[in-house]
Image 1 (cartoon, rainbow, N blue to C red):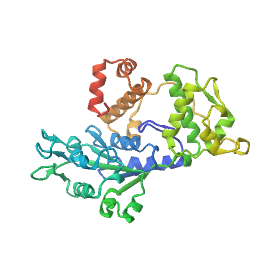
Image 2: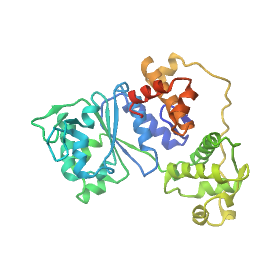
Image 3: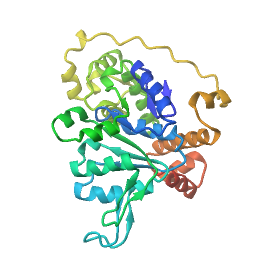
Image 4: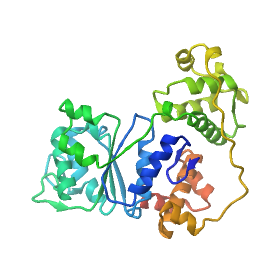
Length: 340
């Protein structure tokens, strides 16, 4: 099943359970902690949560806590006043102020310095921030969603993460399953990515022979969905025939799974439901997704924008042509959603 409201492709029971919980928590303002290995799609899930929330028409502001030096992260999060430090030549708002009314996504929060964790705890408790060099607190209205690929309970035990912050963040835990635990989704995702990349490269679709299917299902996918997506792109470029054979796969994968002859056969695949043509959305669809009319239109538009950018490999002129709009209109829409 293509979970269109999320951009996550899958039909495994673990994903179904996850999205049932997502549907319940999205309309609330509760703090959410998303966990899962690298490459499982945590940011996709968080963006889906924001789109399904009552804050969906307000900013979604992500920040990767592990990608910014710790001495700069406080200023990025909370802003600074002019003259607060050497290069502070003007007053600058931080991510929390930019997200006013919307959602702040603290990605890789497990990488955050202990001293800064105290200030994040204050935001969650008091709903206020203080700029670097500021003279007093400033109230903010934001929802905080955090994500990490670390085991925060282990980090707490090791003294690298504050216990009080962990419990403040872990109000609603959402754990994305590793790809190796998603059963049929491996082949479903492989076919989805191959179809997309072959279309982008204007070549006929690639099929998977039986041995390749067995290999892909047996491989543990340490890089999860990101690794599978990269493999699909590589195959769409390098595979000469119309059917992928074992010799087309990287040696790393073949060495990991061992002798193909002893691998179990591919799992039985559910028959796809045939499309009978375009179906206009109904009120029942809005109620099922727990969306109002504006939220429904916004969600549909964002999904089409993302798909057009993907088909155009990020080239905005081409994406605008695909959508039948001007490039300036596309850029305005991307800016409005913090997608640029």
